[in-house]
Length: 335
Length: 290
Image (cartoon, rainbow over all chains, first blue to last red):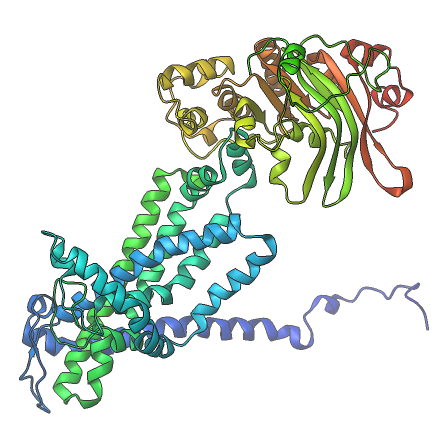
């Protein structure tokens, strides 16, 4: 057997594709194209069919009235709309509980990220980062149960009563902290939501902070900056757009969270200014009433779902605009 | 910190660590140094337990330019980073021995490294301005230390000292990153100078720059000489010969298979380059190795 020392004369057919090479690439291209398109297709169909189902409710109640009034009386008709469908109480519940969540989770996430990135001992960093991410793996119904049975009675209720007792009588802002404090309310839902969105905000904030160039950190230290000054004036300043983006992702998750919120937010189909009001959120209301709903009310619930989708999209768009604007102001390199 | 005579300053401070002062000619490295800004004494540096630099002693004169040269891995950058305690930031780095700055041991336990770095400015190998405006870059240090009075004047003075003012005076609000590499490095020098340190440490400040920008930096160093004491690490022997008053030559000792940096010779630059006392110095300078 020759070991390739003598060359075979060149045959033009050598250059042609043979075997699987002839069809493997086109086949793979077709499959990935289908996969890509199917995402758009599913989203399109979902938006189309829910909007179609919700449309009669919007027409019957009036779009403005649906989003701004808070009287919700579910009807029981099979083939016509008879109830009153004002979803503002749920919209308010969704927004206020998410707002509380982000106000608690954001500073906490920033502190945790800074600790993991700059302060924690090297060996401890990975463990801690992994543990924070593990929080995201806990099912939300478990958060709901834990919040209801342990966290609320042990921590949140005493804190709520303290806040309400001290701030409830203060003029103007007292309205926000007014009692009584029921066992489930906006504040409690917001706190548990904060723990639920902590992992995603921390994961992104940590990643963004880790990308601060080492030479800029050295530059600040070289001018006599302390650890805290380096974190505040170099790392946080540089990471700001990323942290805004991270909070918006967290907010998006808080807006849509269903089971845990349904278990903790209160359940009344009304709304109140106080953060200790036992109200209801959009997702929570859908989850807790759709099983017993008459056909017309199912349509109304779908309309609430469409409203929630719209709010989430608006938040996401705001986030993008915000990140883009801040990025331009902070200089291109900040992104 | 402003005492002109480190010797008397030393005597005046009771309880200060006892120093070995070499008599002229008996020290392993000698250079007739008048007023010293640094007295480095028997410094060993370890990274994670491995010796990186062994037993360095030298006096760095005030108001002059001192160059640290030698092949890669000889510990010249390591020593430079000891002079303002930047090595503290590296995990596992430890420094033994003493470094006296105007007679005060900067490795004494009561010394705050941030205060040391504030007084001893540093310019890095790669230009590293912040992604903020030119003005804010220069004002960063002063703002950090609450020097907000007369900030505009301070920024202008620093930019003038760094020979950058004429080029940037009309675009102080532009990003520091919009400047060319050489300008960025001069911006970094202005940023260091704005804190009015008395020493500037430069870690291969021109190695990332083109030849013209390099010459501009060298000119600048000569202008800053006298007003500041400058310690420069460089790979470029011609650069050391062109700008420095004194040169310390380091080498890598390969005994027992471990690479350890050590100081071979320290003298006036012209002596080092024309009449080196050690054959290793001469071999390096004439290009026979390194």
